Length: 163
Image (spheres, helix red, strand yellow):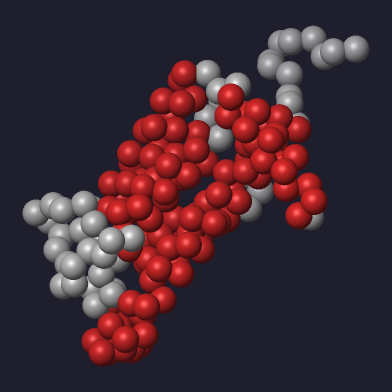
């Protein structure tokens, strides 16, 4: 599996290089929506509606940026392509990102399970690893979807199949 990784990454890069401007627009739109959906309620993006009980950490912003960029690419792979959804890797990556960058004592489930001190001493140290897992899952989803675009080209509707 690892031996085919460079070829898969090249194939994904080929797919990205062939994207037309509207597809890149979809990726930018998806990244923006993802950044807002994750960043506003977690207050990584400061706003008057949500606040944090603990300050944002140095890695919260890069984790949010990586999540948004990769999620935008994954979302754009669904635009104008007949490739079916084959896994939920990207969805899990997005949810993990939300849990990773959120305030540890603002998560009601964590508070119920661990209490305030547990949220700060157990949950908070795990969050950077959740962020890494989130980015990894989104990267896997993006590479799989992109590689599928090149490997499984489908002719446009009405086009004659190549002989």
